[in-house]
Image: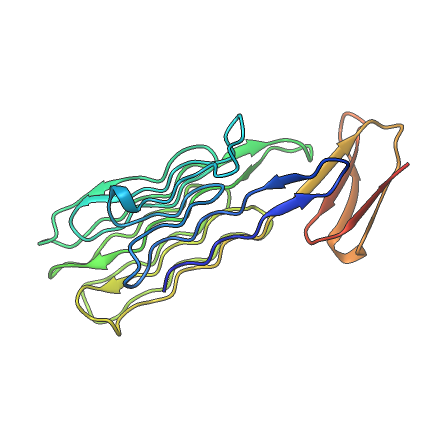
Length: 231
């Protein structure tokens, strides 16, 4: 089945701030990658999911990839670049696209990569196995390989709290029962940073972390829906 869209991250301040969830990738008989913050990988060029559906400037994400020949699938878009487009010879197996690149952010202090696109799932279109696409960094999932035998492999899940895409599952051409599941996308994260003079408090406690930036700023991190109090 087609991959599910990621959920939006919202900060309900005086004016709400929304980061759009990523679009699910094509799967099974569904050829279209869904639009989202970054688009899901699709079958052909018209099927690639559009990115930056929130119309932000600078853009929040990029277009999903697609395949121009053969049976592979494009990689999912990432915050730093579009998913790879592939052109493969179907008689010797397939090569699927890599996910779009992640982007680094140092709001927590150390630089961390976020929002890489998931790799496109491989498809066996000939006697050889198909090569799976690789995740675009930032904890994005690699796709499942399709060896030249009856087995198929599921895509890898993305790392939690990275906003990255999961890898696509592999399948066998012409066999509707030989399809493996795609990996889950990584959950999102909300980080608020303020000057040292402010005091942050948040709930729920298990999903809220308070810290101090090396430069002295206060930081609060949410890994689930919560409430922020600033004093």
